[in-house]
Image (cartoon, rainbow, N blue to C red; front, side):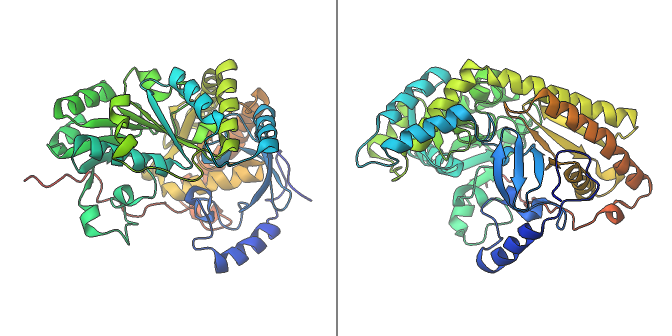
Amino acid sequence: MTNKIEFNKDYPSIKKSDELYKIALELIPCTTQTLAKGPQQNVKGIAPKYLVRGKGSHVWDADGNEYLDFNMAIGPLSLGYAYDKVDDAIKKQLEDGITFSLMHPLEVEVAELLNKIIPNAESIRYSKAGADVTSAAIRVARAYTKREKILCCGYHGWHDWYISVTDRNAGIPKTVQELTFTFNYNDIQSVIDSIDADIAAVILEPFVFEEPKDNFLQKLREVCDKNGTLLIFDEMWTGFRIALGGAQEFFGVKADLACFSKAVANGMPIAILAGKKEIMKVLEKDVFFFTTFGGEALSLAAARATINELKEKKVPAYLARQGKKLKEGYNKIAKELNMPYTKCIGYECRSLMTFDASAGNPLEMKSLVQQEMIKRGILWGGFHNMSFSHTDEDVEYTLKAYRDVLPILKKAVDEKNVLSYLKGEPVEPVFRKVSNFNTKPKKK
C-alpha cells in the first residue's frame, strides 16, 4: 500500500524508483541532470528517486507514494505544480506553435513586463538556463569594461569561469582558472582586499540564507563604483520571490546587470539577463550571445502568465507569511525541546534548517530529520522553498511533523549515535572541498 501525507506506519516502498535508478547507473553519469535532485542529496534506501506527477504543493513518486513538497523542483515552482493559469497559457500557445522561423511577439510582451517590474531592466535578453545568463553577464562585463578578472560569491552555474573556483574544476584550462576569485559574503573588507584595476565585475547572490549586515550591499555598490567595476546580481533565488522586482527592489540597491531564471515561469525553462542599456549595448555588435531556443514561445507564455499571477495575487507577500510560520514554528519547537544545535534561518520565502557540528555530524542529523519527514509524507531537503500552493493546512501539518520528528533527533544526539538511527546512507555535500574559496588575485 502506498504512503500518503500522514503519519505512515512504514517508510515508503521505492521499488520502482530503485529499478529506474539501476538502469540510470549504467547510462547516465552521476544518474541525475541536477545535483540537488540527485540521490546524493537524499537518504539512500529511504528517499524516493523519481517523481512522476505534481499538483499544487503535492507530488507523487514512481511508486505512487504521495508527499507534501518543500523542494518545489529546486526553486522554479513559485506558484506550484500544474498551476492552472500557467498551464492554460502553455496549452493555448502550443496550439499555435513552439519555436518559429522569425521572432515571436511574446519576446516583446514579456520584455515590457520585465522592464516595468525589475529596477534597471532597461535592456533584456532571454536564454534557457541560469548558467547561460550569468555567463553572458560576465562576457558583457568584460567587453564593456575591457577587463578580464572576476570576483564572485555564491553559486553561479556550471560554466568554466565560475566552476573553476570549486573542487570540480577538471577540464578547465589553467588560464581560465586564474581569472576568477572569490570573496566572503558580508565581509566588505574581503572585497576591498581583492579588487584591483583589472576586475571587470563583482557577481554575487544578493543573499543565500544569511542576511546582509551593516549595509553590505550598499557598500559593495560603492566599492564597485569607485573601482569602475560592474556589479552583477545573480537573482536566481531572490528574483520574483523576496519581492516582485527581486533583491534590487527589496534592498534598494541597483545592480548594473541582473540574472533571473527559476521563479519567473513556474517550471518552464527560461532565463533572463537584464541591465542598463548603455552596458547591454555591447550585445548589439561586439558580444555574441544567441541561441535557437531563446525565443521559445511556450516558456515565454508561461513567464507572462506567471508574472501576472505573481503581481495580481501579491505572491511574494504570501510566501513571506507562510514561510514565517514555518521558520518561527520550527525554532519554537527546537527551543522547547532544548535543542540549540538546530535552527531555521534565512528569509521567509526560502529558509534553511541548520545543524551545529558541536552536537554531531551535521549531514547525519539532517539525514535523520529527512528520513523521518519522508515517513510522514513530506519531501524535505532541509529547506522551505515556499510556493503559492503551500496552504495553511500544509503549514500546520508540517509543524505537527516537526513536533514528532525533532524529539527523535534529540534522542539520537543525546545518545551520541545519530548514524545508528539512519535506515540508509546519509546525504553528501555537493562540493567536497572549499579551501580555495576566498581566493584573491595576485597583485602585480
